Every structure is written in structure tokens, then in C-alpha cells.
Image (cartoon, rainbow, N blue to C red; front, side, top):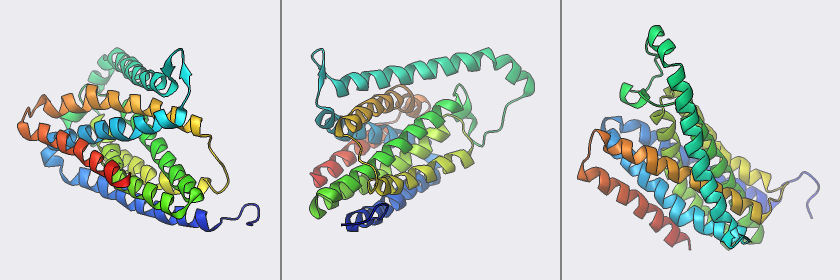
Length: 268
């Protein structure tokens, strides 16, 4: 029996495995940075990855974990819709604020954010940072899932770890892409990427001291899934086809969703 504040074998294994998620997240962000000359393909792939994560990973897990119904509808689905609507509301409010101050910004000249002009125009950086912060929260929950699975058993921990490590490549890719898409400087995108990479390690470590109720975790996953789907459908995919409505962009989107399907299938 381990003493108060100490970390047992399961906790050490969870943290060790979460280091793999740390490296995969950084690899995903590095890939997003290196293909800036194929921006439409990057955004198309990111949209497909986000769609796959929401529909094939987050929502099934949320429905399983949340369990309860509210007025005939699963609580996870209600929170999913709430997350979608809140993301839409936040973006509209920030866009209105930006429009109200647009004249003052024009007099002061364009602000150099380090992002391409086509990415900055009409975008509010706060939306990108908020979305990236949600990705960090999701990655922390990934770490919690690893830690909880290792408490059940080594086999369960290995299966969950495989799923998390594989799709954290997509998380790193999406975190950097989303932050940059909304006009944030490269240093902020890199900072959010490192935060996203560190989150699974901290999440896994936290399970040695704190247990998160399953229903609360399921509700969070549903809410986050709704916000993520809004960003994919209303922002990233339209932006991917804005300048390059190419068949290759659609194929990248399909490939992103198929990749997440493969990851989920291998882990099940």
C-alpha cells in the first residue's frame, strides 16, 4: 500500500506512457508548421481529423460515460449542442467587437502577428487561443484516461494508451493549425502546442491523487466535441476550400477522418 502523496507502479506506468503522447503531439505540430506551402491541404486534413475525433472518438465515449438522460435526450448530446452553440456565440461576439474597433486598427496600420495575411483577415485571435485551450483540456483528459485505465489493469492501460498516443498526433496538428488560423503569432501557436503536449503527462500524473467522476468526464467530452465540430465545419473546412477548391483537399479531409477511424478500430 503506497503512502499518501506517493506514486505507485500504475501511476508511474501511466506517466511513462503519457510521455509518448507528449512526443506525438509535438510531431503533429511540427508537421503542421512544415507544410505551410500547402496550406489548403493542411486545413483539409485538420478538418477531417477533427471530424473523426468528434464523431468516432469523443461522442461515443461521452455517451458511454455520461449515461443519464435529461428530458428524453442523453446529457452528453445536450452538452454537445451547448458546446457547438457556445463556440458560435463566442466567435460572433468577438467578431462584433473586432468590427467595432476596425476603424481604429485601420488608422494604426495592420498588426504583424506572424501569420500570413490571408489567415489574419477577418479572424479574431482570441477564438484561436480559446479553441487551442480547449484542445489542451481535452489532452489533459486523455492523460486522465490513461491513468484510470492503468488502475484497472495493464492490458486496459495499454489499449487506451495506444489510442491516445495515435490520435495525439492529430491533436498537435490541430492545436497549431487552429491557433495560427485565427491570426496568432507563431510563438503563441508554439506555446499552445507545448501546453497541449504537456497536458497528457500532467493528466496522467493527477490520477495518482485525484479521481474524476465518470459522468463529469463524459459531459466534458460531449461539450468539447460540440465546440470542436463547430470549428471544423464552420471555419477550418470553408477556409481550406476558399482559395483552393481542389479535389486533393477533399481527399485530405476524407483521409483525416479515415485515420481516426483506423486508430479507434485498432484500439478497440
